[in-house]
Length: 261
Image (cartoon, rainbow, N blue to C red):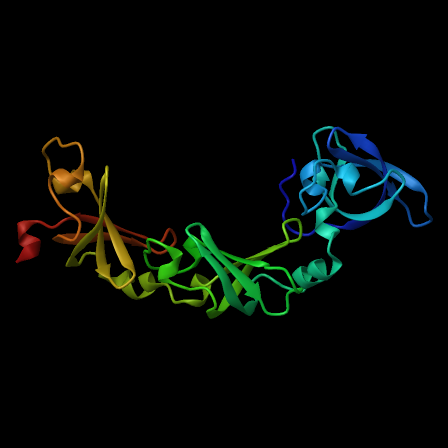
């Protein structure tokens, strides 16, 4: 299966023809001899949008392509797009997981944030931050955390030569608020309900710390949804039953009368 995103070995190949929108190639050995037959799937031909890869390559042309794995029948599959812009590939390969980089926010969307990383090739935007990697806190939109033009520092999660993208994390450079909250298991706390879902409610217990109270803890009566009993913003007293640092979640239980006194 083609699922490798980490950089593979670069091979020199000669285009031998086309199979539909795939590019058929033969690997070129050190002495120039043609050896194993390979294939460049259409989505791996280029970062540019073209109707057919014959617009990019001629039969007999030699190109560089990155090995990305073998299909079920054992045929080698390669990516030409991973080697399409040498300066981009060099930039990506120089970055390592865990490295801290600086950059400027380019665009902010509901699905994530694009970042110009310092030192990237001109005309490209290589950085991307997924919404879960922006902050430990709960947000409705990434614009609550960053804005276009803002300078940031972030940690590299992975570099992908085939997409030309660096996945970054702001959250990785922030202290997990649950670490400071870990000793609260067993405590009774009061906080506002921040979100109601069909199977329970989320309660803010401290800055950037949310706990979940299951519907069954709200009432013994048969109800369809929690909003039949509570409203968003309403204060509720709960008992912290578990602080799971590994899964980064806090489970809550109902606070009994004895707990409230």
